[in-house]
Image (cartoon, rainbow, N blue to C red):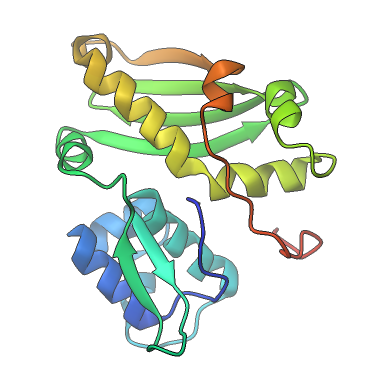
Length: 205
């Protein structure tokens, strides 16, 4: 997931609004969220889904630049585009850029995976460096996963900048894999936003 400002569960109306703003079809969203097209359609028609499924759909939309807003005194829940969701980002997506997703977590490394056309980009995040930056609590695997999921957009911006700066490096014909390592200064330059008050003991399986 990307940085979250909303603590409420995404509504079907917000899902429809986010897809419209991002210009993402049902089939494309289903592929990004790793669910069926029928699941997206059912949800948008107000049929109940499991919270973890709704969370997966929301995460996919956030990954591509949707920001969900809670209901407040001025109106109901809404959606806006993230500040980083620029014309450049949209163009990269059209060229085959896939924002990063979490793949695995080990004692030393957090592995993300992104892509651009024929190139799969594997990003190894230094877990110790991340621990040095976020010193609020011990980063066990579950908390680490939450932090990464909530900040995937930051890694997406970082990778997008690299793609923009040196597109040939990432779009070489026949290139199928590229490794990147993120740590130290790169992590310190990222503005990690934690959702305080989150129940980290909640079952995320």
